[in-house]
Image (cartoon, rainbow over all chains, first blue to last red; front, side):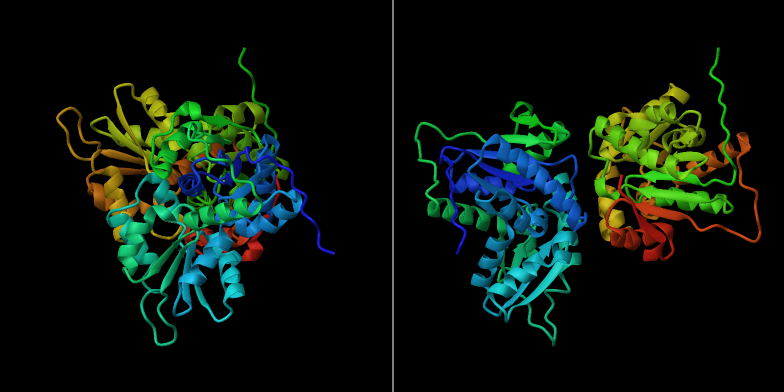
Length: 284
Length: 284
């Protein structure tokens, strides 16, 4: 007998977003662009970032704690806006917080990649943990068993994004160093026609990446695909907050450490200036 | 009445080294080069790195816990082989573990800089936390009140070192981006004649940095100056381990997370291959 989901939450509650730091703000931005009437509550676990170089068990432990904080605040949906946390902890979170809907960033990206590719050769760039974990590789081949998936850890893009070095010769040089061999056609394998940005920091490099790999390669931005999945899931569960012309609620931000740094770097990701008073310091 | 130090430890015990990750291995390497007869016990708190972007209170809490682990293992001296932890936590550690001798990396670097400079204009590069904290600036002006100290956070050098990008156009481009304005002579300030590498990762960039700032600038490598200070302090306390031609003890390594990554990146810092069996996983 299938387990029945008995979820009784109000559509007025916010969507909770969790990330190890600030990268998830690209997801928040995409959701707020697509669903401006939704309340958003963001928690960045900056005290313990980056998750990308930590072990699976550690990531699961940290993510559970952070998610519990969001659930305690009252949310109608949990979005793991962090590829590393999604690939390590999503099944555990779904089980733990059942029947709360829990969405990750991997599945939507994998679906978009499979939908976009024509030659079934897909490249994925992400942090070391996400690539080692093989989450995208698995999600893509589950949807398309004939696909060839080439994964590449691009660890340096995260700190480069936070430093604001998202364009210019250094970003371009790093992109070449990470990607040239993958996008050089070989006798043994086709050249990927699709590139998945498997880390929430990476949408900031979209322009540079497109320049380096060429305009014919389709780039899947997992922030945008996740926003699309959130929209669909809220519709399915009849949990969309009614649009109210009088109000477009401002998101709430919580961080576990160093508000100042959060405010400074967040502005880069949000595309608008964030103020100190908008960010609350919490202890997990 | 001055407090008397009554320290009764055996010279045969190891020197304990602590770092938030693997950067401190440059200090270990310098110590083992200078004092090959000493036993060395290294703890890298990789589960919670980087400290460089965390707040002072968090850094103190983490450092105390890690130092306690080393003290429990039995050591004759504690070296905080991490600039961020030194600048945030050294006084607290000295008080907490008194009368155990506790050395940091900031003071030796400041002394060497003051000894080297002729025009009393000194540049310091470090992580954001070390620069914001002002530890070098204070240590240098305490020794030489007339000194002008220019601090610059070079956050990206840490992940670049761990990625092995320590030479070539990207490292050089980053060095230019961080340093050009400091080393361009201005009307208002002299050009620094001394550069302090205020982060244990940075000795790996010594060649590139020397190329970018010119051969006439003196570079202070805080790993080497710390090894010198350790040597002096052990002599002063009569705690040098007697040289034994038959044995040059291998260091012991402990890490709080991800042994594999530790082994891989550590090799870059140690200048030799480290094996998986040499690294112990510990829980703090």
